[in-house]
Length: 337
Ligand SMILES: NC(=O)c1ccc[n+]([C@@H]2O[C@H](COP(=O)([O-])OP(=O)(O)OC[C@H]3O[C@@H](n4cnc5c(N)ncnc54)[C@H](OP(=O)(O)O)[C@@H]3O)[C@@H](O)[C@H]2O)c1
Image (cartoon, rainbow, N blue to C red; front, side):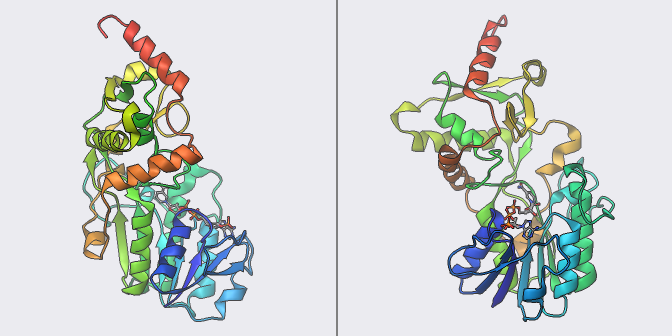
């Protein structure tokens, strides 16, 4: 098949291009920088400009795979390619949903309103922007010639945010040799989809001519189960220095006093999303994607590869060693701990 990837130099989109090449497709990548995988044809263009698709709109495409975040990018691409491309596969997000308070819902759940503007003012408009982009895809290609892929948290090697690489890495580098600071929230749900599994499924959608709207989440585990896998991976890979890292669960109030943030960023405990309003961030139905061929590798593989990747590349999310040491000392200084 002849596949046009709108992207190919970043994280998910470079996996898409690589996997499409490995599975025998002819791949063209449209990007600004042009550092596309070996074997792909590169077209340089800036999607902020009106004529960005001039070099590709005159060709016939079996599928376009797009990871854009800005509505304007998708509006212009779909308008330019709707005659020449058979199928448009768009990477959206579960952030399009209006509420995350109820677990287990399918793709018919209510969405946010669409962003009217072509560009986001800030990431606070991310969900609305993706709704607008989904609408542009559906208006140009219709539901029977498009895929709206809505991933939850994406992870594994290449996760520059560090959210999904922190835990195995921290278990492999315990600050006081034995204890790891974790939130006392082990029953929360947690789901990470490997970027490579997502990419493989997007390519499969092109080959198998899949259409429809799909949630794409990794295996839905408890946070405690996720941490247990991270620990097993670190112990298995860590050698003699790491044999008995144990979790030290601390209540949210104590962590807040220590200036620790949930979810992401510096001085955070990644993947911890407290609050009943957030349960569906990692708990949605993926039955449709499973039926349409989604295959998930074991979480241990994602965490092992992510741990080594972080060792070489770093990542912002998590506690720095000095913070971890201070928090453990403050915790032990409290009576009874
Ligand atoms: N991270 C998560 O947990 C998560 C969760 C749900 C959904 N998602 C979605 O998953 C998708 C994949 O994310 P990603 O970060 O991995 O994307 P990515 O593969 O890094 O893709 C970005 C690509 O777009 C190209 N690009 C950006 N601006 C451009 C422009 N003006 N003109 C031409 N090309 C441009 C970049 O190339 P150049 O810079 O070389 O131009 C790059 O190849 C995103 O849509 C994201 O919203 C992510």
